Length: 523
Ligand code: IDC
Image 1 (cartoon, rainbow, N blue to C red):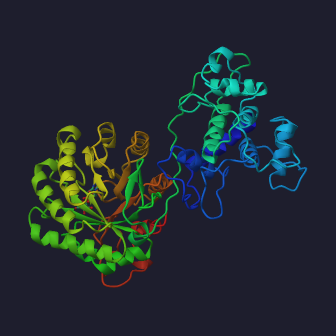
Image 2: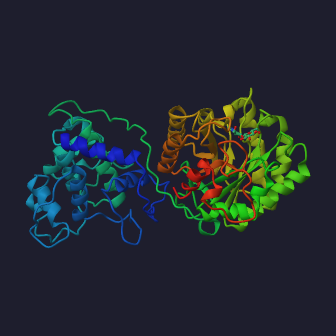
């Protein structure tokens, strides 16, 4: 029991620590029903894929593979085997532990590479993780439409597996005891047995255990980086930003300061300088108030287009941010926003580089139901009329912190993410837990603005707090942009005062914030 607890804690620890940047399996779609289980078990070292980067989820699992993964998960030490098969050590240990009998998987190895029948697999799992669990014959056998197919020696294990929820049966209610199981199915079963085993087995002969709901544990996500030519059109699959091929992708880079105040740092050289440190996204912050777009639309729009084109030229993704701030509710300028986004989305309708952030930070009295959601619906419709699949980022009240309101009442549509903004000197664990709750509800998050400073753009810098935040985001595959790429005399600025925008930068050009942030573009 102690050992199992240890293994579970190791597994859970792996879930909260940054995972090694192994490439995601090319054939495990993040939207698949088994992706989370495969991801967790891979991250905890229990599972490996093939050398070509595939996992082959549909392949039938062999006895050797099944026993080896289960033995690793249970912490069984390999013993000296009776044949030269690669799995001889673990199969010998499993046999000696009494998980199965000699004839079910002879240690001489002839059948090691053959499919393991489901009834044998379930017996192995129950012996390994829930040896004392029992299921009531009358209750459990009724759940199994093809119970008559089951060999008598597996009754006890299969009934207990149903009683504890390790096995749920397929949609037709059958168990198919003599068929094999796919690698994906095996992964799910082993994970369930491991989880239930450490929760404490049902007492012998005790009542059937109701199925325990599995707590929404954050799943580690292994992302890839790269630019537009590598990743193509982005899409949102199950709350995760993915590339055109469906692989989880992370965008990390800088936000400009107000475009109309610091246009020099949105030129080709400045954006290229961030790319040189590993950034693959650039956010163009186009203030609407404060003397920005609403005061001088033609000039500011031209600046925005120039900045977008400069980022695209660097093979970067680019976020066009309708930077509402003093204008409180986005709804107050919904007509201008519709016209602006229609024009821009038409202009860039063939470019996979552009993401649309339709309202930086609703604030003041703006509500989700009364202001932000109806605004988002209208502007989204305008964008979709030109650009049917580009990713659209939606803010929320309280300076884009109320993602729980959006998660409870999301905007209809595809490829939508909700922005969460934080400043490391002001915001912490509470906001992070909002992210986990929103994601558990199926709401994808993009941190399109965060700072190492306090929320007023100054104070600190709060490097330790920022590290906690970025580790948290990396572990969940959440993308981010840092505020801001400018040389203003405030701690959130990444550049030293007077930094030229027409040459490459060195470490000496970066502030404390800039040095830290630039070091994290790669994760
Ligand atoms: C701040 C700038 C500061 C500027 C101020 C008002 O850092 O130089 O004077 O805006 O325009 C946000 C906003 C962002 C803020 C930033 C820091 O999106 O515009 O920039 N912040 O206060 N939300 C939370 C913090």
